[in-house]
Length: 164
Image 1 (tube, rainbow, N blue to C red):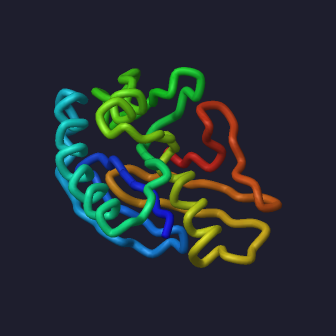
Image 2: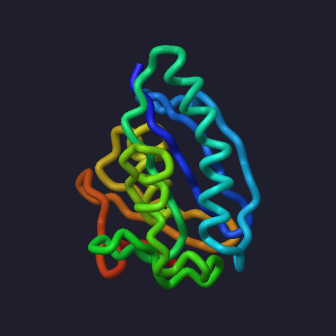
């Protein structure tokens, strides 16, 4: 069975797990996020948590194809960094994707957290089978994502449904 690593970096907590191709959660954990902490320390904690999960999945003979990383703020796709994140200012401009790829030896993809949530709902949740979907995320911050005609809307900063 193919699977992927999943990391959701929130303002107060970072959720980490392995998700199977069908959307089922194989493993999960939550670690604290320090809003003003050094980004490399967060990467260290993520690797210390996700690494054993990846090893366990591989030991079962399953392939991990890559890692999806969601974080609040806006995305600079050219540099694979986040910006405009009031809740996690230390991550702004930090090469998060590159740091995780180097440490975990897997391809990582960054996504705005609200976009990742609406994509998951569209593919595996309440929006399955719909052509249009509006998703609202409520956590430390407030966000949103929009799917129209089966495609995620993107504008400046890779966001379309950003609410604040």
